[in-house]
Amino acid sequence: MTGTEGAPALLEARGLRKTYRTGAAEVVAVDGLSFALRPGGALGIVGESGSGKTTTARMLIGLEHPDEGEILVQGQRLARSVRGRAARLARAKAVQIVFQDPYLSLDARIGIGATLEGVLRLHGSHDRTARARRVAELLGQVGLGAREAAALPRHLSGGQRQRAAIARALAVDPAVLVLDEAVSALDVSVQAQVLNLLSDIRRDTGIGLVFVSHDLAVVRYVCDEALVMYRGRTMEHRPVGDLLAAPRHPYTRLLLASVPHPGWNPDSISRRRRELDPLA
Image (spheres, rainbow, N blue to C red):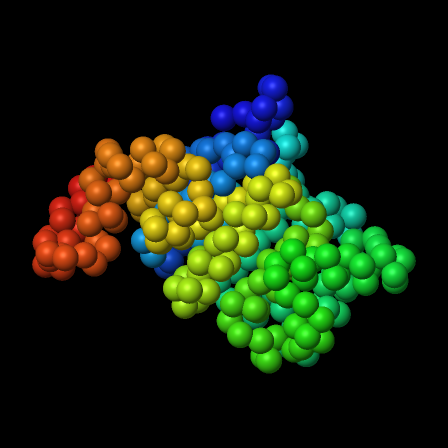
């Protein structure tokens, strides 16, 4: 898929493969993964634990390097290795990530406002007044204010910390924002608030979202497309509405059937899960 008027895809993965060695055995975490994300688009990557979705997220932001394949942002191939300050900052502006646990990106010793100001200073904002104005804009964008700006992460709620982590990621104006199970640890009501926030940010900024999740309900709410992974491979990749209304692959049907509902039979789910192994 390409962007409007022939523009290149905002984010493109081509034939990604990643393997790990565990003793004498080789484990294929991601096998031949390809997709394209249009400007302003939102792709959900869905699968159970061990499906390869988090490895994919880590490759997109450069924490892991694919053994094969390539990743392009706005038509430019991302280098396998990044050396030097300028190259690292450019990579950060291409793709940012929000993790499940916001403590991974927030310094527990520094207030939220100071954290955002530090990011802006690192990326070349030398005017203190301009930084302060931008910090206020970022906090307002995610529904936080002066009280939260002065607070340490431990003094905020889980939802507030996740909003602060999103603000930190947005501070560098990335082309793509990857969210790795970014709402799975939140209460349902707080999940809804954060998902609404992400939808608003996407609408207002045109940023591309890659939403990594095991929860099809979350993907339904945020994303245009869903890519279902099982044992590192793509089972199907279609518009979310089509995929959820008429799933084609047995694994996608199993994911949908696994959500508890009236008449739900966990024994049947377990049996169907065992029958999937030959399909991998």
